[in-house]
Amino acid sequence: MHQKFQDMSSILDMFSVMNGVQVIFQLGFVPEDDELYELTSEQYQAYYDGAEEEEEDISYDEKVYMLLPKDPQKYSEFAAKDVFVLAESDIILIKKAEELIEKYVVKSGKKFSDFEEKLRYVASVMPAVASDGTKYSRESNLSSNENNQQSSNTPVEYVNRRKEKTYLKKAPTKSGKIQYCAIKNISKIKPEELLDYIPDGYEFYENPRDAQVYFRRIPVYNISDAEVEIVDSVMKNHEIVSDYIIEKGVNEITIFVSQINKNDDQFSGYPYNLKKSINFYLRYEDVMKFKKSGKMYHAQRFCWRSSIDDWITLEKNMDLRYLVEKYCHHIGRDSYYELGGVI
Image (cartoon, rainbow, N blue to C red; front, side):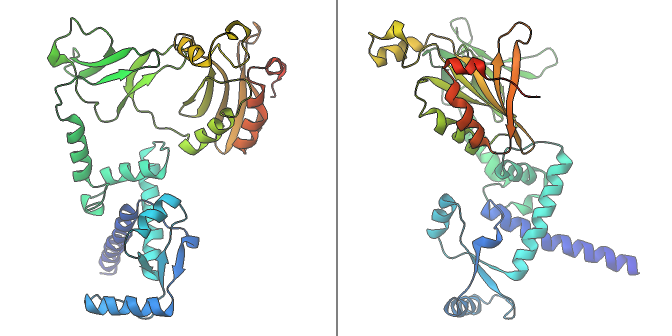
């Protein structure tokens, strides 16, 4: 008998935690302690009055907090709506819900680039009721996929930096599955073989070196857009390198530079916009990368010595900006080749 009561208690606790999960799906993030502000006496009164008017069952003994996100974008979204409040009991459930979500993530064995990707995955494997009515609901994802796949009668195309168009073709494999191919010449392709949408979970990928275009599954990145922005913000102010491409990899950020820079003598008589058009047809070479391993970043450059002919690590540090500002300065300069590696 005792075991049955214990099992029922666990089930009820799970249902309570699901309420916390629903709040997280509704918000799209987990509120931090310094984003919660206890209501003022006037706000408490308004909160109680509203609860009584709506005939809600609330506790008058627990503290209630107003949520004000630190993220400017999230803050503006909340400022445009009614005040979002959380009682102490809600916050406890959210903490438990966060732990539950993390268990799903760990169990999956997958890597996710941000919390948004985690939520979308967890919503796909949790009971549908947890995400109903939010942007993570299965209906929302299904609707989004259907909208993406609606026929537009115009083949989807990708235009690379050389202004070359690439189309998407579908073809059955011997096993009966569908495979996708990126093609340039569609003169001999049947119209029904060309796709007018990009399948969910796939993307066009342009190789920075030669602008070749491929079609692939979207990788799960361990690199965030914020980390890429750190590198880009430094390269924008580079004194020599003017044309570069920053590639976001699964575990690294790579800098590719073209054969043209602001100090090239061979193009000194040409206007810069002409240099830029010529640059469309030149190759970009990967000259530096910042590899992420746990919380540590490895600044690396390529060494062309025949005895090495590989990437060498210049320095390891947990501060990405420090490494970027220290080493990107050498790109395009003779000092680049003097940078030695470390073990």
